[in-house]
Image 1: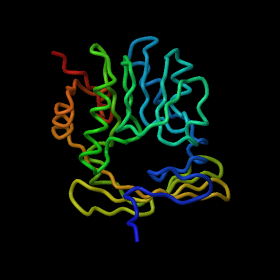
Image 2: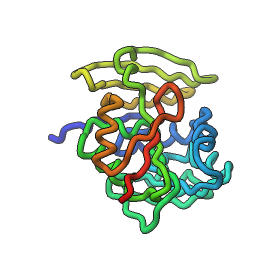
Image 3: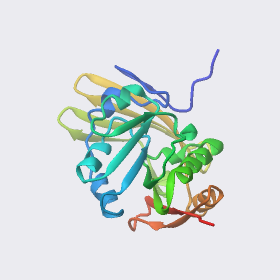
Length: 230
């Protein structure tokens, strides 16, 4: 009998290895993130988007004038992306023969509880960022782990998001389950997330050859790092 992965999902259509529902992700629209990233990077910057999913952020970044290479391990996710070069690969084993102005790691992927996997993600970022470029990471605020609770939110007509389960097995870990309902379709996504305190994340970045250089906003959810050179 095999154990269930830390992140897993249920529902109609393809479910990716990390529990994400392709049909659901293909319906999602951005919430200001592309413009936020665009304002923090050079015009027409080349972007390596790690864990691109179905292109929710990819397509607006293209429209804003950036060259984007979208990476995901799910061919079903990548099939939804139009206008960008796509690469099917796990983040941790990606090896491309070029570097980028910006390496983008969003959707809280960096919060994996697997230390080795997180460090491999950061090494991939370092390996693919230009010496004068930057890495942009998205994380949940450390304080979020203390306050998050079961909640329901109506996103739109017939679209409801519910956080149905919250458990804290250790002070820095959170087990949670999201439920997404759109009309008569329903998906669940169970995941484990690790709190990334500022000092801890700075040390992880340093070990990968990156230096935390600040935050893109006062809430500290968006982290900017630059490569250590020399």
